[in-house]
Every structure is written in C-alpha cells, then in structure tokens.
Length: 260
Image (cartoon, rainbow, N blue to C red):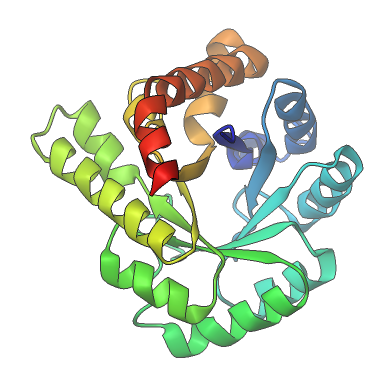
C-alpha cells in the first residue's frame, strides 16, 4: 500500500520576503528544510503578477528538486507565458489553476469543461514534453470527466470549501466531504491519479487523508503560518503524522478498494 504523499507549498515564504523587498526569508531554503523534514515534494505557484514566487525562485527550485530527486509541482495559469516557462524548466509536474489578479488566493477550481478548447492543447504540449499535468478542480463529476477528456493524468481537488465549513462548524461540511469522496472515486475509476489541497490544517487533514484513493495532499499556507510558532520542520512532521494516522485507520477500507 503506497504512502499518502505530502507536497509542501512554499509560496508564502516568498510573500513575507516580498513584503519588505529583502532577500529573506528565502523560499528555496524553506523548500530544502521541507524536504529534510519529510515532504515528498515542493509546490510553487508562479503568478502572472509575481506577488510571491519569482522567476528566479523557480530557477533555483527546479535545480534543488532535481538534485535531491524530489518532484517540483509547478502551479500555473493556462497562459502562453506560463507554458513557455514550464517547457523551459521541465518540472516533474504542472498543475493548471485558475488565476485572477484581484483574488487573494485561488478561490475555486479550474473550469476545464468551459475552457476545454484552450486547456486541452496546452495539456498536450506539456505532456509531450514529459511533464505530468494535473488540473486543480472543484469536486464536481462533470469537471472530473472534462479533465479526463482534456488529457490530464492527475486531478487535484479543491478542498477549501470543505475546510472552511469545518472551521465554521457548518452543517455543509458533511455534504462537501461526500462530494470530495465521490469525485475522488469517479476520477479513480477513470484512471486518473487524485490529489487534494487548499485550506487544509491540523483539524481538517484527517477526513481528507482518509479518502482511500487519494495519493497526495498539497499544503502550504497553514504550514508556513504554523512554522512561525513551532518551526517549519516540526509543523511538517506533525502534519505528516496526522496524515499517516488517518491513512492507517482507513486500511480496512483501502483493502476493500484494492480488491475491486
């Protein structure tokens, strides 16, 4: 049984650095610390406005991830500029995300169904270059099917609404978790690998990590915030332990999935 992987997003180390226009804290150093603490890979989002991660950061992250034999997950909008950068660096993975300048953070999933004619050719070129392509989508069965049709190998489910509902003690949390489970099961049936991320913290990680077919969680903002209080290494190690505990407790369910 494969271990549930943890990708650590180091975007907001760069956010703190950029707030003062200094050279510190260095997101590349944070990536090295994350890998040393047990992260299985590094995620970084190069936005059009360069509000956090810079082109130079991507240059350096590509080098250290390659040197350490760990994957770099390059989050990117579906634009010609970002496609050119991805093809120049050839990261292990490229995750296609929606992007609006006025948003504080990614507010929802990519509309693969509505943007199929634009997205599918980009996916094809990235895949042809040897990049593993994922689509960051909402837990919607129509978007899962559209992602399969567009040629991605992976989907990453947006967990933000579920995590927010849990924190607000909303009755919607159960329904949103069921949606995540249904989308994961359908993607697995279609032969897609399934990841999840956005808004996950220590309180919300276990229900997500326990979904049997999930292969990877990508977590960033919470871990960088928690690092202020306990350090990046301990923050990652605690998250890793919670993920492993949730997955261990779901072993009977996992075994049933494997027999299907």
